[in-house]
Length: 56
Image (tube, rainbow, N blue to C red; front, side, top):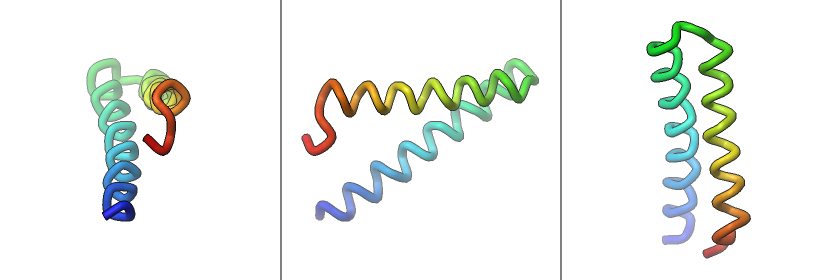
Protein backbone atom coordinates (compact mmCIF):
# COMPACT_ATOMS: atom_id res chain seq x y z
CA UNK A 1 0.00 0.00 0.00
CA UNK A 2 2.78 2.45 0.93
CA UNK A 3 4.61 1.90 -2.39
CA UNK A 4 1.38 2.55 -4.27
CA UNK A 5 0.78 5.83 -2.43
CA UNK A 6 4.39 6.91 -3.01
CA UNK A 7 4.04 6.24 -6.73
CA UNK A 8 0.82 8.24 -6.92
CA UNK A 9 2.40 11.16 -5.08
CA UNK A 10 5.47 11.19 -7.33
CA UNK A 11 3.43 11.03 -10.53
CA UNK A 12 0.99 13.62 -9.17
CA UNK A 13 3.78 16.08 -8.46
CA UNK A 14 5.24 15.59 -11.93
CA UNK A 15 1.83 15.94 -13.57
CA UNK A 16 1.03 19.06 -11.53
CA UNK A 17 4.26 20.79 -12.52
CA UNK A 18 3.78 19.84 -16.17
CA UNK A 19 0.18 21.07 -16.12
CA UNK A 20 1.20 24.40 -14.56
CA UNK A 21 3.87 24.87 -17.22
CA UNK A 22 1.53 24.04 -20.11
CA UNK A 23 -1.24 26.32 -18.86
CA UNK A 24 1.28 29.11 -18.29
CA UNK A 25 2.74 28.71 -21.78
CA UNK A 26 -0.70 28.69 -23.42
CA UNK A 27 -1.74 31.78 -21.45
CA UNK A 28 1.45 33.88 -21.77
CA UNK A 29 3.20 32.35 -24.85
CA UNK A 30 6.50 32.54 -23.01
CA UNK A 31 8.76 29.63 -22.14
CA UNK A 32 10.36 31.71 -19.34
CA UNK A 33 7.01 32.20 -17.60
CA UNK A 34 6.27 28.49 -18.05
CA UNK A 35 9.57 27.53 -16.40
CA UNK A 36 8.94 30.06 -13.62
CA UNK A 37 5.51 28.59 -12.86
CA UNK A 38 6.92 25.06 -12.92
CA UNK A 39 9.55 26.11 -10.37
CA UNK A 40 6.87 27.72 -8.19
CA UNK A 41 5.08 24.38 -8.12
CA UNK A 42 8.20 22.67 -6.78
CA UNK A 43 8.72 25.42 -4.20
CA UNK A 44 5.20 24.72 -2.92
CA UNK A 45 5.98 21.00 -2.69
CA UNK A 46 9.11 21.73 -0.63
CA UNK A 47 7.16 24.11 1.63
CA UNK A 48 4.43 21.50 2.14
CA UNK A 49 7.01 18.81 2.98
CA UNK A 50 8.72 21.06 5.52
CA UNK A 51 5.49 22.38 7.04
CA UNK A 52 3.54 19.13 7.31
CA UNK A 53 6.32 16.56 7.29
CA UNK A 54 7.43 14.23 4.54
CA UNK A 55 6.33 11.00 6.21
CA UNK A 56 2.94 12.14 7.46
